[in-house]
Amino acid sequence: MSNLSGDRQHFVPQAYLKRFTDTNKKDGLLYVYDLLRDKEFISAPAGVAHRNQYYRFTEDLYPDIDPDIVDKILDDNVPILDDLIGNIIETRKIPIPSSENIFESIYTQMGLMIARSPESRINSILLTEVAIKEFALTQLEDAPQEIKALVEEKGVYEAFKIDFNEDYFKQKTIELAASYTETLCRRTWQIVETPQDCHFITSDLPISVRKLTSYGAGSLADPNTVVFFPISKYIGLVGEFNSIESYQLLNREQVALLNTQTLERPLAQVFSCANDSI
Image 1 (cartoon, one colour):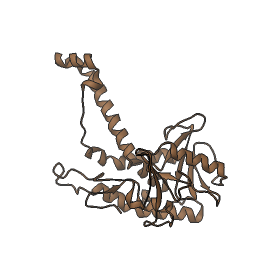
Image 2 (cartoon, one colour):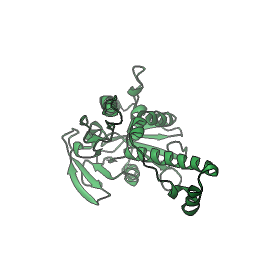
Image 3 (cartoon, rainbow, N blue to C red):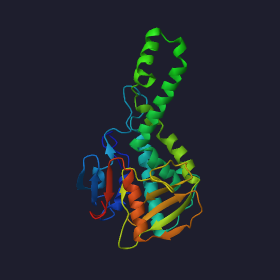
Image 4 (cartoon, rainbow, N blue to C red):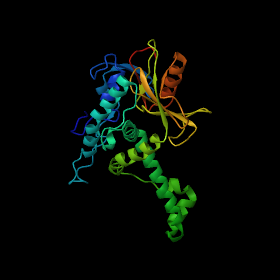
């Protein structure tokens, strides 16, 4: 659970990260490589993948809203994620939801995992900013002359500076998760398992996308991509638009390829159960 006072709110749940520690418990240890600081250190899940007041609303702007409502909704779903991952590890099958509760689907939980990431919020802000500025271009004919001159001199993207209150994008977390979930459900999913002598790593962006026929990342909707979601040190989910078997025991080279995919696009940090992979 994250701290409901609004401080240190995790965008990657500790219940997920514990499965990559040396003990499979929240008080276990992760080997962390921080790419931004080029630094390696050891930490429990509580010490990584969080930001202060990341989901908390500005109280004076929204006095009638519980400032931690988004964080509470996400925290309420963490036990469901934990149970789903435990079920997949135990049965090597993706469970079918036992009720109409959409959050009992691993795909919904994956959508939430993507939507709650800082990268998702940054992308939402950038897309909104582009849309506003493109609309502004359509209104230039009626704009004051000094505005026209400024746009002509600097271009619309430099002429207009927009400061966003991130509360709007905090509200959009669940809505974004629904759109990601819809795309994830269109893929065929395979459970993959490592040999006993190697393991998966994960990152502060646990769900990664890689192009199948060319170098680099792709989008979730791109049919020419593979999605990888490691759910523990030894078990992961691979999703493609092609038909694939429901389970595969990997060799070391295949594990290395998927770990490389995780390494290619973390937000800032990569996590491992040992210091031999990063």
